Image 1 (cartoon, helix red, strand yellow):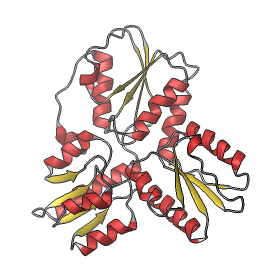
Image 2 (cartoon, rainbow, N blue to C red):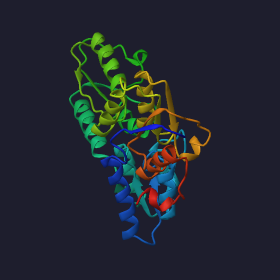
Image 3 (spheres, rainbow, N blue to C red):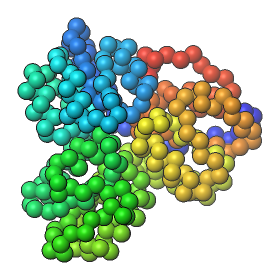
Length: 301
């Protein structure tokens, strides 16, 4: 890769919620060196973080299609850590009934959304929640009540009695552009609805930084992150909306070995759950064409 111009799109590295979750997991292991520790689902959506936690003898239980409540059936003893994505109150109750020691790594912004939604439900409102079906953060919200309606697209907007009080909010890692679009569509049908945009600051600032590349003649946007990370996928989608000719997603340098970019303007961004260690390796590779030795311990150090 020769004579490329590299633009490092800031910020990089873990957001505050992810850092907190990893710190909790590391501290729980330090305080309980000999106990069984299990994370209920992926702590964050990055498999290299999961591998690094396994290195600390912290097991992750994740099964596609199962809710957190169902996953809990597979943990019978020891310590359970709830992930950054938040959990339904019934999961707490079930874990305590099973005699498990609970540590909660829920992101404070997710918890904030849960509290707002529960308050509106208690007031009798119907809640329109914009999010991804089966995503653990969304699951912790749309399972709160039958009066929470999950909305992924315009066609999901329900038809309710005109007298119904409607409150609208969203998953914290959604695209700000998609949220604006769906807010407008809902407002047309429910002009008296109350709107509360809960896209978190870490997600918003990364998306705005990608949108700002629109007029900078970028040839390639390289998005570093796990394929299962929603906030990473949204960065790639926004890059396409910004008209960047090539948008490439990569988990590690191994995904770039066949790329032949010469004399290109390459912008590099990363999701809020992407270790800075992995992004730095990719930046070095794009600059030099060389790869450094990989250390799983450095992923969460």
